[in-house]
Length: 386
Image 1 (cartoon, rainbow, N blue to C red):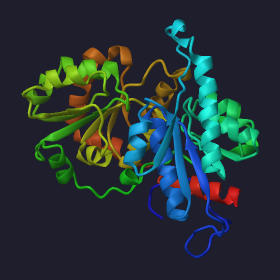
Image 2: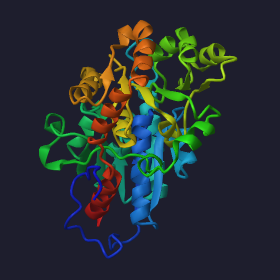
Image 3: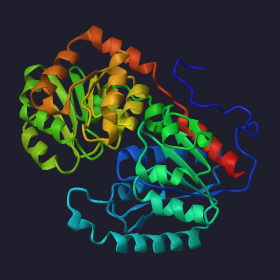
Image 4: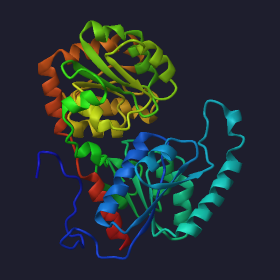
C-alpha cells in the first residue's frame, strides 16, 4: 500500500478473483449536479462502477441549463435534463414558477424511470437529485447518497432518512443523517487526477507556457470566484514583474474581463474552465483555490501547495472550517475573501518564492489524501443491490 490513505473498508465483500460482484447487470441512475463539486464525484463513482461491472448501464439525470448537461457527455455518459430550479433567495419574484417546474420535473422523472427501469439510484447533491431519489424511494427502489461536504445539503438531509446507505467525506455527520446508514469513504476523485502521470514539463507546454518559469494555478471553483478573479485582474502585471506565469480558470461570468486583462500577456493562460485538471495540477508550483470539499480532496491527492480563499457565504461557513483544518496542520495557508483584493497576489507570490514553505505544504497536504473512495463507494453500492 502507498503512503496515500485508503478509504473505508472493502473487506468481506463477495468479490471474485477479479474483484467483481457475482450478480446480474445493473441499471443505475446517478442524479444531481449544479457544480463541479457534485458532478466530478458522480463521474468518478460511475467510472468505478463500470470498472467493477462493465455491463452495468448508467444514466445521469441533472438540471437543464446546468453544467452537468455539458460535462457528463464529455465523460462518455448519457444524461437526461429536468426542468427544475432551486429556490432563489435573492429575488422571491423569481420563485413564482417553482411549483410548475417541480410538477413538470416529477413527470419527467416518471417518464425516465418508465423507460430506463433503474435497479438503484445514486444522489450526489444539488436540487435535481431530490425529485429523482424521492420518486425512487416512493417505489421501493434502493437509493444511495454521497455527501461531499462537512455540512450536508438540504436535499441530501431530507433524502437521507429513507436512503439505503449514505457515503460521507468526513466523520461527525451523525447530526445530519441516521448513524446506522453512514459510511465514511472520503470524496471520490477523478481517475485522471488520482492516477495522473503527466509530467510538469508536458503540463506547462499543454498551456503554451514556459517550463522554466514557476507557475501559479487559480481554480476559484467550477463556476468562478468573484473576489479571486478581481484580485488577479487588478494585479496581473505583478506576475510578469516577478517572472511568474498564471493558469487562470475564471468561470463563465468573468471570462470577458479576464481575457481583456490578459491581452498581450504571454505568461497568462485564461479560460472559463479547465477540463484537463490533471494538466493544471501537474503544471502548478502553487495553487489559489476556494476550499469546498471536492477542491480540498483533489488538492490533497495532487499534493499541491495551496493558498485558500474560502467562500464566506457557504452553509455554516464550512469552507472556512475546511481551510482552517489544513492551515492548522501546516498543510496550506488562507486569506479571507474580504481581504483578497489587496492581499491575494502578494501572498501567492511570496509563497511561490519560499521553497521551504512550498515543500512543507506539499508534504503535509499529501498525508491527508484518500485515493480509493470511488472504488469503495462503487463496491458498496453493488454489494447492497446484489
